[in-house]
Image 1 (cartoon, rainbow, N blue to C red):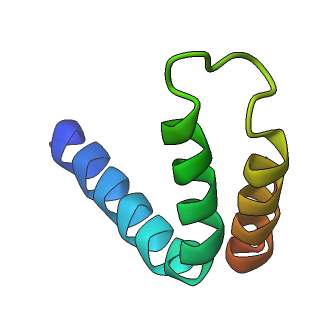
Image 2: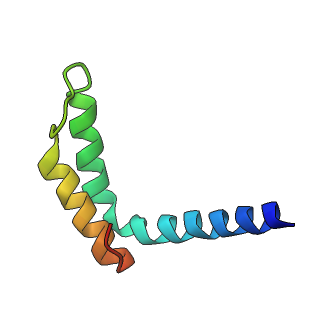
Image 3: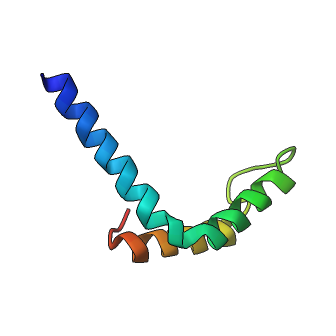
Length: 66
């Protein structure tokens, strides 16, 4: 029973993220393109500007801070 409750909670979280982040497609795409373009030499803080834009959009859209 507890396993089913956890699975249901996880499913609801994924659906919430999916709906909320749909509005951040532009930022997510820019971040993904940056990572893809730099995949061979990717390192810490690579694509930082794109990540921060995506993070800000996610926080604003979901009304939650991480």
